[in-house]
Length: 311
Image (cartoon, rainbow, N blue to C red; front, top):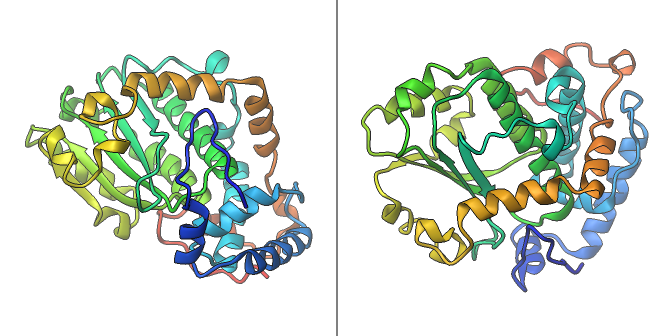
């Protein structure tokens, strides 16, 4: 398999080899797993869509750490969440359908992979003028980004940097609806199987502990244990190489504003919008599902899903 760079993503020459090696996979094993995956999908009567691109299926297996059974469960969760939480999936065009949130947050996934084949996501909060619509469209953007990564990326997951230096943290926390945030992160982390290596929150105020406590309420215990507070941008360099960071964070890549604008531009392209609309139709018809309690499990706290026998 040969990876080709996209306008948003670049790869290391050995990315495929190293990722597969880490997961103990080779091309023959992957081909067999994808065929089994496709056969299983064809038997899921509650799926409204039965055809998925093979690149999507392979990415799903990679995000599941090479486990086909986990990849099956994750796809079922994603299709179910599109049915249970339709508000997150009813808009696909960032340019024409979304609120402009650039005055509140600049964010984006950096184009270059780390040496360990992780992506770096940077979010800089610039204002606390947040309302429910801004939070919703931010969540929708993350979902579109996740859909794009599911199609084009080949990585283990993400290291996240959340820059809170320029805001009143307490003011922000009072405006966040915990349930809405939990639902959004459930979609991204559980539905799209976003693997988090670490979350670095950059802030000088002692009140950042309130924000961190809120975050820990809406993620799994495993992810909560990977949240760290740093006081300076320079401290980031001890954990993330400069070669993958934005210029304004002491790195070698384009500025965060340029990254933000590039993601908006590419996700708004006609081809991608059409793809998103198509993928958002991959839902479930619960009248045909055999496990009646599944929906309650999917909408539980992130990380609390029980093991399901979906074969």
